[in-house]
Every structure is written in C-alpha cells, then in structure tokens.
Length: 260
Image (tube, rainbow, N blue to C red; front, top):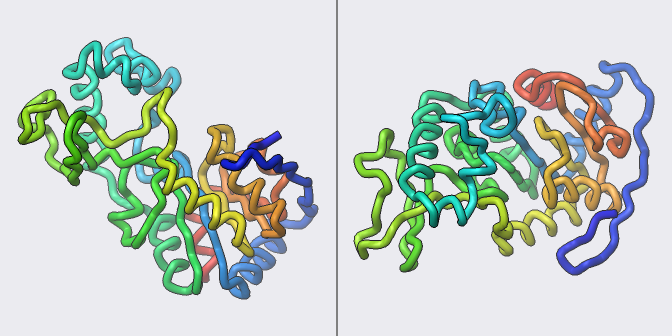
C-alpha cells in the first residue's frame, strides 16, 4: 500500500503486456510521440553509466564507514569534519564524470514535449550539466551548500574544498544541501513531482530500483491515474509487473532509441 502526501491510498494494478523488445520499443516511441504530458523518474543507474560510484552498500564503504553512518544530522553534529571529508571525496569523484547519452536524450525529450517534468533521486548534478532546465531533485544536490544557522544557500563546485568543514560568512558551519537519513524530502519539490505524476500521460522510469520511498510511489500513482508506465532498467524491479512496457537495457542506450 502506498500513501500520498494527503494520506490517500494508491493501489497499483499490474498491466504489463507480453511483447518482443522491438514491439515494446515501437509502442513506447508511439506513446511518447503522441503525449503532451510526460514525467520521468531517474535513479542511480543512469549515473552509474557515467561512472558515478554507488555510495551505499558493500561497494560504498569509505574508511570503514557506511553511507548510512555519515549521511545523517547526528553524524554531522558529532563530527562535521569527517562528514565533509567524505563529501569532499565524493565531489572529487563526481567532478570527473560527464553526462551520458541517456541524460542528453532527456534534454531532447524536454524540448519536444509540451509539458515535461524530470524527477531525479540523484544528487550528482549530471542532469544540470546535460542541459535539463528544471530537474526536481528529491534528495538534494551535492554541489549546493547551505548554512546551518542563516538562510545562505549557494552552488559550490570547488573540489577539493579549501577548508573542511567549510563555513558561512556568518561564521556558522555549512552543510551539503542533501536529504540525509531521518530528514523529510523538500515538501514543495515532492509536491510538484506528485502533481506531475498525477497528470502524466506517460511516466518513464529509468535506472532506479524502485525501492526507495517515497519516490517509488510516483510511477504507481501515475499508473493509478491512467498514465502508461515505461520502465528502462538493466534488470527486473518491483515496478516491472506494474509497468505497461519494460525495456531492458542501459538508459544510455534505450532512452536515445525512444526519440530516434
């Protein structure tokens, strides 16, 4: 069971059809070409195709710390220098990466669709670098810093940072503008994403495991409201049985084909 921000129950209905990959691709292209309202949700998979490492799980260990032990308000209060050292390391890795054809395909799709919304769980800023005009960043942005006391917020792409932990001009600590464990998603951003899912005619999911809530609720809501859900992923996910079309493969390969 999925709950909307207003507490409304959403029950997805399986509607996947058995077709060949070629048939699925042709049908998906037709749906997108005729749609006026398209929403897209991207996850770590599309960034991994650009070489952005996964920072959770056994492959995300850093100095014997798990991401869950560093990305929290408690960790920051306990040792802001350690947390910033980790983020400075992450920023240096991401800075060397570039958008891939999947990112650029979404920029092209934005130019073609009258009402287009890009929603991302990624914090790496690759959608911005590709040229997406207004990605809804559910989990924040690793290149944005904000003051822990005053209202200062700004983009900071320095890597490595000249000072760890960095400080605001007011003297207080700056923190990454990231949604940490135990923190709520930005309300206005998520509400905009929710509204896009409610109104979408086609909802594309690319490179996400469809496990992290509340983002995983969005394609299910779209399906409930009548949208056709198109999933692009390397492997089957919990969303696959509830998708109208499943296109297996890397987002960097499949998404450009949808616009060809």
